[in-house]
Amino acid sequence: MIVSCPACATRFSLDASLLGPNGRNVRCAKCGHRWRQEAPAPIEPLPPVELEAPAEEPPPGMAPGLAALLSGREQQQKSAAAVVVPPKLKPAQPKRKVGIWPWILLLGILCGLGVAAYIYQAPIARMFPAAQSVFDLFGAGESDAARVLQIGNLKSEQRSGFLSVRGDVFNPSDYPLKVPPLMLTAQDAQGAPLGTAFMFRTQESDIAPGETITFRMPFENPPKGMKGFSVTFGRLNAAK
Picture 1 (tube, one colour):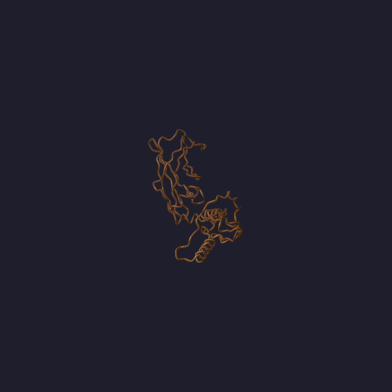
Picture 2 (picture 1 turned 90 degrees about the horizontal axis):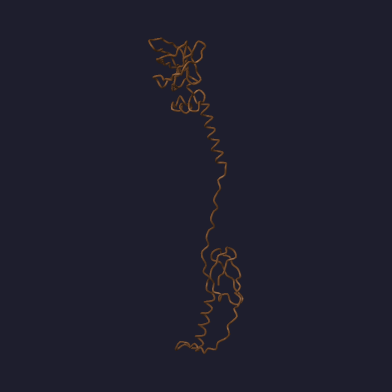
């Protein structure tokens, strides 16, 4: 018969004859639970069949009383046989759930680093010039070269067929900067732009703290009615 443990529901096979007519106490080898296992309902016997069974004879030389005693002991040992069941397994540990607080903490750290970088951008750009490109990408504060550099001393010289423009770029900060592109725009007498603006770069790509660099650019075929010009980059503007 199949017996199931009431505590852990472990199932194992048990010889019903070991329970006897009134049942017996059994123990689960997996969880150690003990309970009273009743004997199965008796099965109605089949109609008896008369067979002549030879009487079991004791071995030669053994007294009949001794043979009966040994047979009774064997039956007791069979009835007291231990029930073998599978070993008890440890229950699986539930998986731990990760809450939202680690993500909130990470977001707070990133925001703090961003604020610190914005406040101390000048020392950072001075110690790590390559960081200036990152500040320039976001157009943040004083690291934006177009906000810091100054254009001045603009002069022009008319030559055969073209206009030669000369000027200076000054870095008033205490950290190096990259020089952004310059744009030359022709203007009429009222200061309105004429034609298409011309973009160019200085020979120097970087400018040191307190340094002034001079640029010179030929402006070929200036538009008719040109009375002045402007050189700009970013939000700065210098007009002539």
